[in-house]
Length: 282
Ligand code: PLP
Picture 1: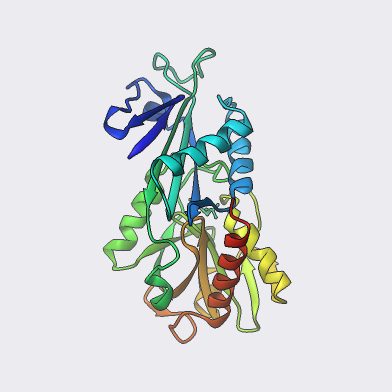
Picture 2 (picture 1 turned 120 degrees about the vertical axis):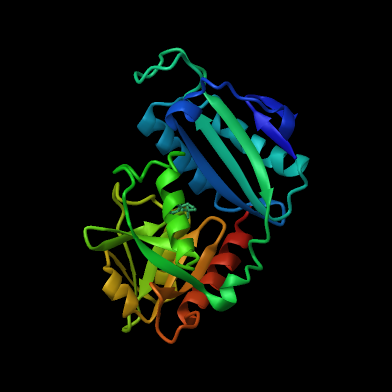
């Protein structure tokens, strides 16, 4: 694969970053994941906007203009002949002598690479995924997309240890989100319930589009926190993210959701979401 590192296009084995990079030493870095289908970028505007927001929250300056950033996204797809999969982008504050205080003169480290992956044809769409409830012990600024991913990683391993595909994180008696996706349920009366935006969750780009699509399709939407009990009693459940789109959740802590099969409204939302995003891919 060809990767991008600070203005250079390199073979992945030749891309090297300093051991003093604050991304490595302090997780002082943010990232974005943009889906690619048919060689085109999905939801690019949303991901670019969230990237700017994350950088502003941490006071990291982007080394590229908006136009240059888009050009690099397009170029990495072209160089790797990426048809379907994702682009991973990371910006750290840069390398500096180790100190908790931010350096004033570090140059940010910008990295992009691609991963080829069949995102449209996901076998889990037919079966749904199982999730295990795990305590949410992440830091309290989950609205910033930092590379501080150790706890979500541990939560996913904890879920795997009980045979589940993913974790749904729980804090103060309410579901926050999945380890790397937004959590949603559809109640028995057909209302889509998803947690409102706050620093407790990442502001999912897919979440925003799916809520819009759901409202336009005539589904009632409530943006509020829900409990694990409410989720277990729901008619349907699903997750959303840049690469899973809309994916049914059919089991929570070993209990089936609804009849234990992917829900019809969930599958409809997946179809509408994919149609809409493919039509607007750039
Ligand atoms: N929540 C978390 C913790 C995530 O890591 C992600 C990223 O995939 C999401 C939600 C979903 O965000 P998006 O739809 O922008 O991919």
